[in-house]
Length: 54
Image (tube, rainbow, N blue to C red):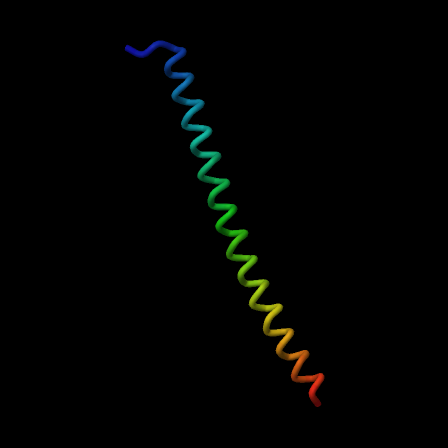
């Protein structure tokens, strides 16, 4: 049978793993947003160039 200390340590590890996974998911969302924003900036730049030529 596990001792209280071992169980507590395992719970802390699980909590930290969950926090790391949550952070990783947030980073992936951020990278997706960043890519989307870069694409929007590129499109706006193209439109601006087109307007400048008129």
